[in-house]
Image (cartoon, rainbow, N blue to C red; front, side):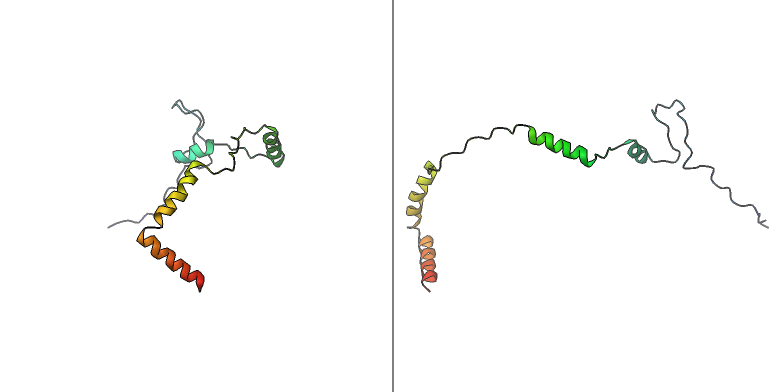
Length: 111
């Protein structure tokens, strides 16, 4: 027959807040037991939050820097490709589909 014991199951002796000191296994810092390596690496990242005054100072410094020189604006005169568009429009006006489209447009405007 099986005997039932009144013993409680052993509780784990691992504590998550207990830190194992570096014991020569090549890590620079101390490791927490039962910790995933990604959690350990994320704990090593220390981001510094800048204060509002630091942000304002940086923006002021950027405003004082001379802006890079933009290329000069070209003149407002039409460029050679725009001259070619007029000739292309004349040629397109002889295409049957364009003729039909233009006639429909004229009829719509005339309504």
